[in-house]
Image 1 (cartoon, helix red, strand yellow):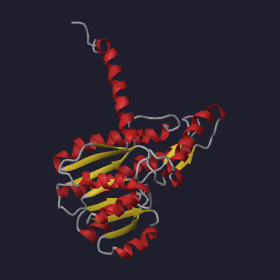
Image 2 (cartoon, helix red, strand yellow):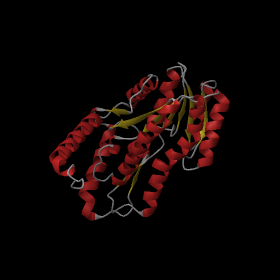
Image 3 (tube, one colour):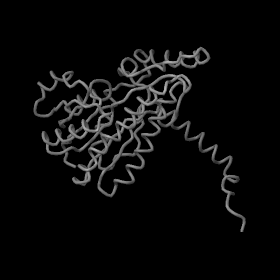
Image 4 (cartoon, one colour):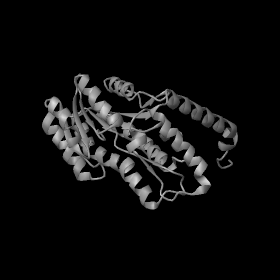
Length: 280
């Protein structure tokens, strides 16, 4: 890929998406910023008319993904990096979430990503190059109480990303799963929704997690989104970016802990688990 990249970023209105737009432009790259309300970036576009294109995109609509990709190609001639960042979190236990809430969570966090992928993959295959950065979460590697539905969408995204990497390596397309821990973004303000069927039996579990989320704005251990964006840009410019990019002390610690737990689990049952063949 050329040294100057063209980024296609979903969910660019706030959080990691917004910070990526800022840092990519500062790095000398060009950006196609997609969001539900592109007018939010109108002042920023006016300041960067040659390098920034803001487009409306509801990732749950296939036709909008296809149109946004084509508009980006019309403007810049190519797309080098796609960042699937659009998404939100549903907080509550499995029993408390409604069918409608679960469907909506998957429509955005999973099916929305698939729609964007199907729009960009023909472009990347034709170019014989491209990088897909899927914004997962440490919760996509190790789930937590009160995040079961949200975490399951991120687990799905991790599986999609692994298959995507295998399927498209032959075309020069690379995949990076970004796994942030706790960061001081607007996620806890505008990107969280509560399960509707709140149950007193789960109040201690859910309330405790909500208090943790609320404290992130002032928690000194929470990550700096600007540093995360800078690191993502550094990785995106690598010849061989890693399949997984954990971000934050808590992400690394939790992932290491789970890997150790799984390794111990497998080791304990290894002899019995491998003795399943028919007797000769």
